[in-house]
Every structure is written in structure tokens, then in C-alpha cells.
Amino acid sequence: MLTRVALGGRSYLLFTPPPGPTPPPLVVVLHGAGGTAEWADGETGWSATAAREGFALALPDALPPDPAKPPKFLTNAARWDVGSGGDEDLLDPPDARPDDLAFLSDVLTDATRRAGADPRRVSVTGFSNGAAMAFRVAAELSDRVAAVAPVAGYCRVPEGFRTARPVPTLYLIGAADPLVPVRGGAVRSPWKHRLVTRRPVAESLGRWARILGCSPGPVEESDAGGVRTDAYPGPVPFRAVTVEGLGHHWPGGKGQLNPRVAGPPSAVLNATAVIWEFVREYRS
Image 1 (cartoon, rainbow, N blue to C red):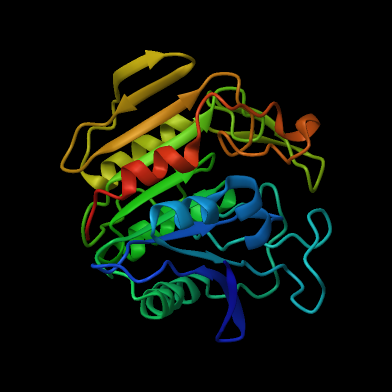
Image 2: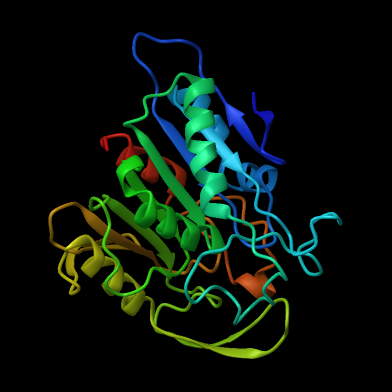
């Protein structure tokens, strides 16, 4: 059962598994722009997976531009401050940016303590704007993150950023994503209804590869059943998974976003299961 935890004027959802012989891992899930922690869990099924597999789960909430009003997808969309570059091409920045990195650092500490989780086995995943924030957390809090798994978002970490340690990474994207187009191109903002130009996803991933000390040129590992996996050789695993026919949705999720904006959902791959199998192996 998920419980709402208040933390420094903000809050997050927490699932704590029954006590076991060893401290459980902790997975932190970051929703996308306009989303909420509850929506993200319903879309992805992370809490059901945590209950079945016995790990702790935290789903923090971002803040909307006007925290005095309820968050709404189109008019007061909650989103993370992903740092350099941001998402201003799709959303107007808030007048005063919240310190999301400090908040998420506090979530890692608080959720680990409350759930009795292993602080060496904390992993972060996120969708869209939450994926960009997951990259930022893995860069700036790399000594506390065992693995990271961004889904359908960009790496906004500046070129040349030096992490305390390279973090094992699994990235997932839909080949038919109209908001994060794999090859780049024009994107119509769901919020501002204006056309903006997106760079190819490969440029973003190549920058992250260089930050990790991996080769920026991927090598194909497999391509079957509508799922291609590319690897970036280096000191830690870094794989990118592309799902054919998938739009801007959580792979294998409920596909709750409007397909006219987000493109088609797909059940070819269950990202929650795949990410759990990846992150469960690692320790910081």
C-alpha cells in the first residue's frame, strides 16, 4: 500500500515491503510534466511490482508553476527543474524555480530510512520530463545512485559534466514518439501549441555516454520482435532500447495519454519489469 509522506513542505508516495532477511532496494520513480505520483503509478504499475518483488518504492511529486493552485495538465503543469537547457521550449518556466535536486536528495534519505532500504541499492527512473530529471539526479548525486533508467526524455546534463562515479544506465524510447522524436524534428507543444525543433535523441545519449566515460557511438546488441537494443561500451553498462510503433508512453503501461498528442501505446515490452531486472543488480 502506498502512503503519502510529507517532507519539507512537499510530499511523496512511499511503499515499504514487509521486513526480510536483508534491507530491500529502493526505486525512485519521477513522473512526467503535467503528471502526478498517483498517475505515474497507475500508468506504470510500479507499486504492484514492488509488492510482488519486495523492494521499496518512492514516487515524489514535482511542483506546478503556481503551487497555490491545484496542478492541471494544460494550465498548471507540475514539472521538474531539469537544469541546463530545461524544458522551456515546451513550457514557460516558473517565476521561482524550486530546488528539486535538494528535495529529491531528501527523498532518497527519508525513503531509505523509513523503508529500511539499503542506501547502496537506490535506483532512479522517470518518464519524459521525469526522465530528464533522472539524468540530472544520476549526474549530480551519482555517489548515491546505483543505476538510472530514463524513459522517453532528454539528457539535459551539460557536456563535460564530471560525475563522482559513472552510473549504470538503461534508456528506453518509442520509435514513433512524436514529442521526443528519435531522429529529431519539429514538435508541437501540448501546452503552447507552437512548433519547436528537437535534436536527435542520439545526440543526447552520446553526451551522456561521454559523461559516463563510454563510447558515444553505440553498438547494436539485438534487434528482434520490434525491440532494438544498442550498447555504449565503457566502464559501466549503458544500453538504449527502442520500441517500434511506440509513441510517447510508458512501454507496456496503460497508455493513458491522448494518442492524438502522444502517439500510439504499445505492449511489446513492459518497461517496469525490464527496468527492475536491470537496476536490481547494482550497488553504488
